[in-house]
Length: 245
Image (tube, rainbow, N blue to C red; front, side, top):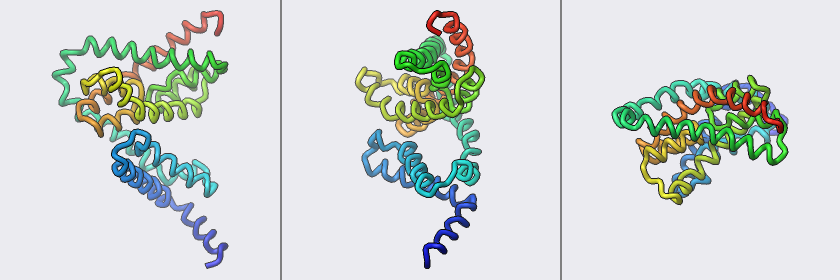
C-alpha cells in the first residue's frame, strides 16, 4: 500500500473515538505488565509509563489533545465512580478511624498547610511570578479542585494541572523509600501521608501495596481536597498582607 493510502487510513482511524480509547487501555495494560516484570520498580509505575507512551504517540502523530480526549473521555467519566469506590476499603477501617480522629485531624492540617506553603516558598525563592505561585499552591489537591482554586485566585489552571500530575507521580515514586528510610511502617500512617501529598496517583499506588494503606490514603486525599479549598483563601489573604507579595 502506498504512503498516501496509509495516511488516509490513519486520518480515518484518528477520527474514531475507539482508537484513542484503545490506545489508552493498551498503554496502561502494557505499563502494568512492564511494572510487574521489573519487580515493581517505583520509577516504572504504570501511571508514569502509560502517560509517557500516550504523549509520545500524540506528539509523533501530531494529534491535538482535544481529539484524543474526545475518544478517551469514557475513561475520564470513570474517574467519578472509581473515586467513590475508594470508600469501600475505608469502610472497613471505620472503627479504627473513630479512635484516632484527633491525630488524623492534626496530620491533615499539618500536611495540607505544609504542601501549600512549601510549594509557594520554593517557587518564590526561584523567582516565580505571582501567577506561578498561585498555580502551584494547590498542587497536592486532586486535579479538579486544584485547577478550580488556581483559576479562582489568579493562577493558571493548565499549570496547576501539570503541577498536580508531577506531584502525584513523584510522590508515588518517592513515598515508599522515604517512609522506609524514616522508619514509618504502620500502613495507616503511610497511606495517610501518601494521600495528602500525592492525591489520587499516590492512592492508586497505596492500594497496590496494602489495603489499609489504600483506605487511609483515600481518606487523606478527600480530606485534603476540602482542607486545601478552605485554607488556600486564608493563606492567600495572609501572604497578600506581607511586604514581599
